[in-house]
Image (cartoon, rainbow, N blue to C red; front, side):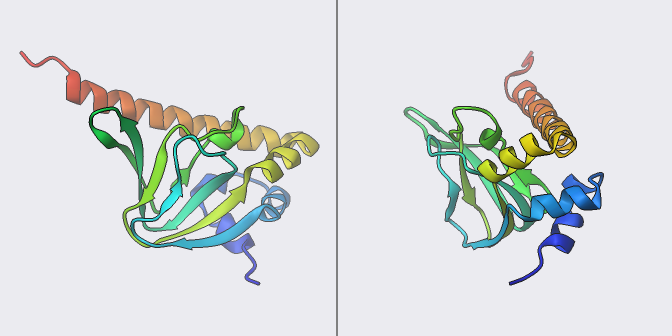
Length: 153
């Protein structure tokens, strides 16, 4: 079995975490490989993992009646994927499909929530980083919407 500590430690998402906290996170981690076209998760399914993309690109899709799947965001190497594991009812609001071969670390959401309750310092750092990711994605979405629907005079 590969020691995932150096891989997780090298991820930008965990750069400010203590060595002890990264070791805690490693206990929830699994290495995964998915092929182009495969789904990481589908809209409406249980959100039970958080992903660190090591290699590849994933498209986040939203089903639009009459249009089918619409790509609303892409997530690439070095970026985290998914926050629905954190917020009840723990269901995915989007689908995530691999645009390329994907190598990622899958972090078990239930395991992470339990460790955060047991270790408030880890919980604080993880929640702060997740909030930063959410804010960044929200800002990117707002800019895309302004570009699509902005003033067309």
